[in-house]
Image (tube, rainbow, N blue to C red):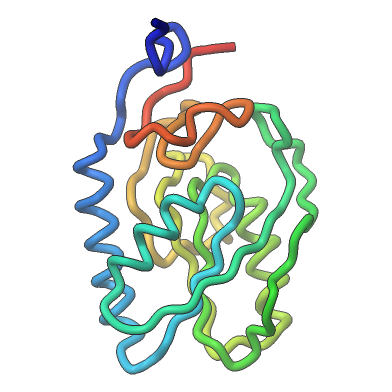
Length: 180
């Protein structure tokens, strides 16, 4: 029987499952308070944010809608190519909606900046950003993140939706990826 995750691929746990659930609950409460009386539209950036979006929507008291957008900037690599392209756009118009763009992790901020501009052009009533993780010292200072779960050191991480070559998304914690 093999061990999962392989200890040679997944190193130090940076954020435990309990810490994630506690912080997601706090983020849900903040969003519910900030958008009281509104039905926010959570727009998850596929694939990495899917677990976070599912937990976040359950943590928001009151009605909430979801949609997804898929972009490509990493492919199967561990570093961004520097080029963002939309591979699946939203299913519904967002004009007049209170939109929260939800990411798993903000590294350079290139993808978030691109998506904020893309969505702002569609005239939502409001547009906010939320990321489970940010990497310390890596973001473009022009990228504003309204709701942040955790700030991490600049290491490549996996778990809770984040992957390395499409693996390890199902881990309930966030850990440093040590594989190749």
